[in-house]
Amino acid sequence: MNSLATVGRAVAMAVASIRYLVTDIARLRLPAGETIQQSWSLLSVTAFPAALMAIPFGAMVSVQVGGLLHQLGATSLTGAASALGIVRQGAPAAASLLMGGAAAAAIASDLGTRTIREEIDAMRAMGVDPVQRLVVPRLLAMLLIAPVILATLIFVGVTACFVIAVSVSNISAGSFWASFGSFATPVDLVFALLKVLIGAVFMAIISCLRGLEAKGGPRGVADAVNAAVVLSVVATVFITLVVTQLQTMFYPEQLV
Image (tube, rainbow, N blue to C red; front, side, top):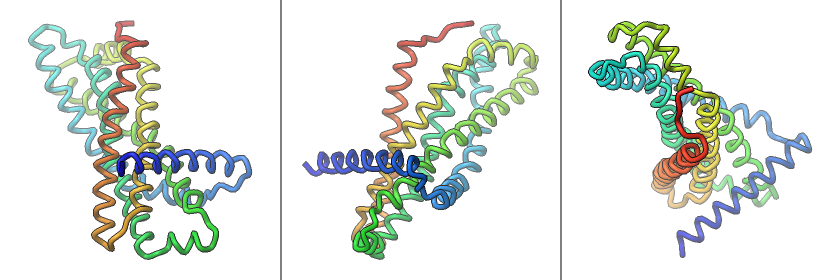
């Protein structure tokens, strides 16, 4: 029953956040300053780790798949492997894990600290809705940084894969990009973006809810952060699985 109640509060917060987001944009009352500040704060803790994560990930795809394709005599398909491994699966999954591990933790710790200092209660006493004032800017910030993180991972990961393939595996640049273009399609980018955007919404709602419901002093803030990270990562795994299954059903892999 407690779990169902928590899910119900999360759904209620999501509905209220979307309603406030739409109405504030229509009335030109969106807190742009808070949104920009939160976007920069969340981007600063995720962009550089994303670039660092993408380098070994792209190199790993190139080395592992390149060795297998070399044994099969199909080294020219290394670019296709990077398209399938990085663009379709690796980059969205890594972006979701980074946002769930870094951005969600930052949001939960910030709101949790405000909660135990009774700032949230003070806002409610003054007639200010914390969802409109605090949750909506963070939700919008997560939606804004998600494409940036995804683009960073794809660019750095594919570049690292290309460099390793050309310099180590002696694959020509032309064959790499030819096979990459044969398998990587705009549909892959659309579904990759869809994965991270849906995940961003879930992570923002989960982390904000855990932060606003933190109690018990600093220990409560730590528990809220831990719960936000774990729940965000689990949610994004299921989201990635569902969206990937839909993509496979309606847009199966094929050589174009």
